Length: 135
Image (cartoon, rainbow, N blue to C red; front, side, top):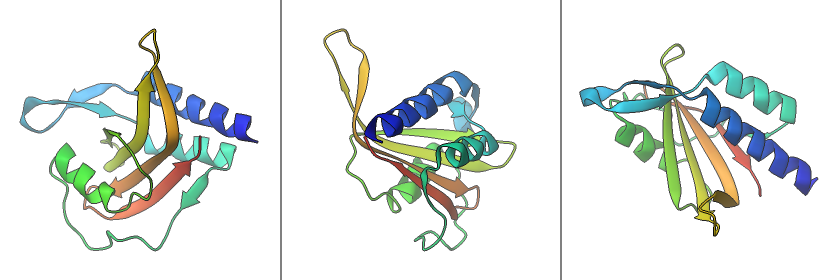
């Protein structure tokens, strides 16, 4: 079961890395993109641990930057983490903020250690989904 979970995490991470493009963000900065629908499909197939209710961010607070998204998502995060990645789906107007702990091996490859959590927020700052994957 643990091997299956790790394979699932690696699949989602790899899918995220290869499916991420760049779009123009606020102030001319580059912003990584993702597909909310593709993520949902992947989570349903792997039967991921998805939380869909009882969130803190339930009032509208429009997200105007990656920093806003990270700050709101951090309030929903329930794991220890050292790194954060922020993505935006312009088609669905959804933000995904990933929280994780990463280390590098001797060859410089990134290794994930600990849990990995993705928080999904609508453009108006309301949490829609939290997905936790264990290492």
